[in-house]
Image 1 (cartoon, rainbow, N blue to C red):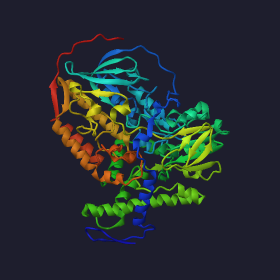
Image 2 (cartoon, one colour; image 1 turned 120 degrees about the vertical axis):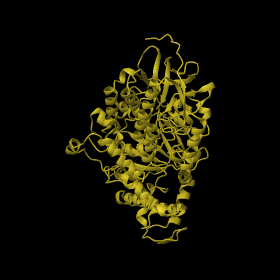
Image 3 (tube, rainbow, N blue to C red; image 1 turned 30 degrees about the vertical axis):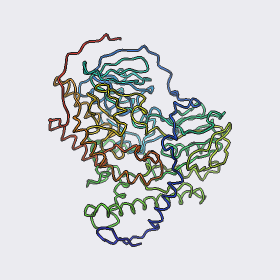
Image 4 (cartoon, rainbow, N blue to C red; image 1 turned 135 degrees about the horizontal axis):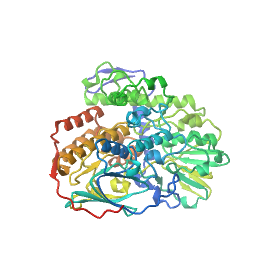
Length: 617
């Protein structure tokens, strides 16, 4: 098929097995089938659904008395963001800090998500942080969730963080005390923490959600969310063997990353399995394997960060030597640019020409996913039902070697629900007008993404003059470099906010924690009482972030509904406030900013004498 690029008039004579115009039309048809006027409002928090148990099934409740403590720093969140914050604070000889964590142990998402088959889709050797520091090499390329959780505990032990952490504790409000230059944070335990610095790392995907489904309270069987997996009911473990389901009819709702991992295990053990699919996922090979002991023994100091740089360089479009990780992501990102489709360097083409080439490359990748489905799934009708019809990056691609095979089993049924479940009855679930009798419903429906900081985290942050961060961020996040916000002194955002990020979330958390800890050390050493960005520096960075996202916003607007594009409301897209730029360039910029020691964009206030408070043991 011949194409002519719009600006350069360069010809593209490609052997395509699809017509891009027809694909665009099909994408639009599929999108309209799934669009709902209530967008994000179609979901509700798991804790809001009284009929479904939101309690922690993994540990017994912790009983303790409230405490009042004066601290140098308070870290909110005990996932990898909070753990790396604790590690880097410790490395900087800052030990008077506490971590507040809602779960019963460290790990964040890896504490809560213990469903069968749980793994990360990033290579373990670059995903799991502080491997060299903790003296550990993962046992396989893609570690199971249990190994990642154990590594979170390892970091906690290595840096002595357990004795500095309050588990099963939620922040309720954080208020800046101008006179004392410190944050007062209260918790649901009645605690009162007075901290010079407040570091937030609660995570972007923390509040489990369910769709609003009529009749959920009528169901007499078992219902649970994948982040509250009930092994007492199913039997087995994250490794499988769910023996208690062998006489059970099970429905799983959701076929995103979690559903793709869970389905093969439910299919292997349930008497019957109904897979309720709103939108198919792109599912490519994972090709997991054990870590080569000889390779692990050959690693030299600095190996993990060299591996990070190689990975980030490839996905950010830099010229690097070799492909050390050699995974789906490092092949995907270069392929998405479409350079393989023409000899002329992409950098020499106009933006319009690049967009045409990239669209064709995107469609090629999608069609390769379709061919994989056809090569594995034996029933043509089921295969067609599993095919995604949207831009390749409208949803996070999945990597799994067993998911598609599960649909060849006689006990597995695919139930299409483009706009969601019709309802739940006393003994089943209604999908597409058909009633399926089931004993158990598992919701693999993800986490709340669009309600803003207070809605997701459950508390507000009140800065100078009582300014509400929830209100200040009502039209989008406002930061300098993704860390600091004007009017909120000594506050550091460690989560996903206006920093560069593509794939490896934990690498971003690690770099943010490292930068925050060294700045706090500088403040403590130099008699500084408070720091914050100027309004001008913040405004400039926000404009830069939003301008960087204009191409992505246009792409998401054409996507099928999902959390990437705010379920069709692009203003609520989960990555809307991420800086769409090379991670290599971003962190080099941060290093240059730090090394200059001019702290451009920040203002510093001298420290004032603190008034001591009565502290409870």
